[in-house]
Image 1 (cartoon, rainbow, N blue to C red):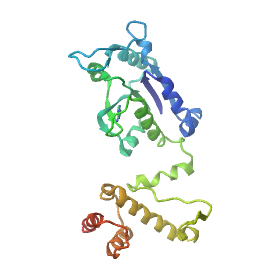
Image 2: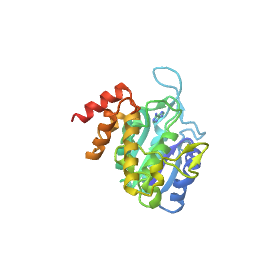
Image 3: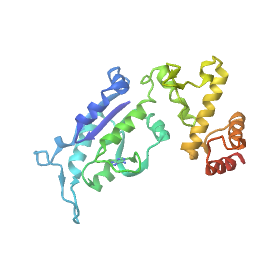
Image 4: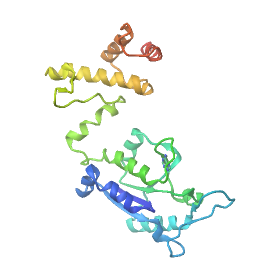
Length: 263
Ligand code: ADE
């Protein structure tokens, strides 16, 4: 996977990406990263790339031409026309499925905006995907681009070790991760759940699956509604409904569960 980032803050992208697992993957040649400083394509040669908005209003707008020149220069050099992702709170909301889809591309360009926005005409001209990382507003597109590159990269072969990729499975199932424990067995009076010390792999797997189901029900019930549930999953969820008071579920959660199990 080759990433190209058009930005006013290349050092922010490079510092963020050259660390930890992603840094290791770049060093190992599984990923490549090139940042392009939009300021180098300023019209005036003095680095200015923004101007006042037509129609008035607060803030400045990034002009079309420097961005377009930066983009044109890039595609001329790489001799390809990859998808161009523009980071914006007005875009489609990023999720695991989109990460999986984008991970199948060979090259991706990210365009990071700043100030009050970017001249719409250059967006119309070069952007293929408008993407938001969630319903909140950030000061620029650099962090969202890094969030996307991080989660896309995890799915690029060679980026994660075998051990690391195992950790990804449970979200792929559409359920949240089960809780993890390490030494010591007794930490400040809090015990590791006994089943994890039992050495019985079948029981451990069942317990973990049940924990995933429980957490998903508590924190993200809408995910549970779309997850694939087998007979044993349903039996566990039914047991939560049948328990008198001790299940830790609210009346609302029980109602949701009853409806889910009725199908
Ligand atoms: N730019 C500013 N806020 C953003 C968000 N939530 N997602 C993507 N890009 C953004």
